[in-house]
Image (cartoon, rainbow, N blue to C red; front, side):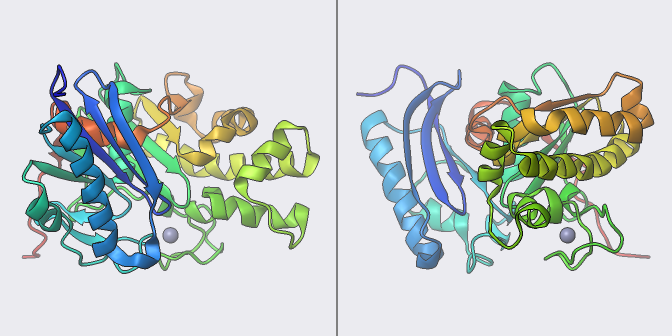
Length: 317
Ligand SMILES: [Zn+2]
């Protein structure tokens, strides 16, 4: 039976799970599906699985307004080709939009998942009522996005900002980006697991397990989150001093441990950032369970946020 309202197909194409939902203009979920992303199957097989999932929904609900996709990597927005996908090996160079468009003749919009999460929070979550915000998504990596006066900051190459690759230790751990001491190396889920070694030895402890232990009062786990909070504050204080935005949203799987690390985070921000001390800067946890999926729907059902700056020539005179 066709739906009573128009709807968007929202896709969150994660390195672990592929989630698809039909979402209407009031952000009500009409249908949802989730399945494992088999990374080893490669891009073509995963996209075939995705298309079948979408076709099933369309067969039940009728044609959608369009398809919004949150992708874990950089997408060339003009061509719809994947530029970089660190968590999906083999996807770089894949023509994602044209492959989808060959089977699904609807408007298709692609967005980096960190940006999609920020768009979701902007329209439906912690960002409602604010025209400017930055968001950090702490998960397998650290995603980030900046919305300034309702425009998305993308930098001249379209990949900005990378707040996770701001250095917090000039002599710190080597990072996959080629830098050293990047925030991501300490406050992503794998980074936190490395911080845990000092307290747990070589026995691997995941960030999720550390959260459970900390909530149960385990001293070693609390010490790990305390250190993580101080490092996160060191990075965040720098951006608050630099950007002076009114709102910073912390999301992603790691933010489930927010109650454990928030007190130390705030103490450190008070100490490290003169702007934060003035008391008009909000640092909050994300509000949405599925910010990326909500943002993917918003790409279709909400007014588009403009890019800022507009693409510029990088040629030097
Ligand atoms: Zn880095």
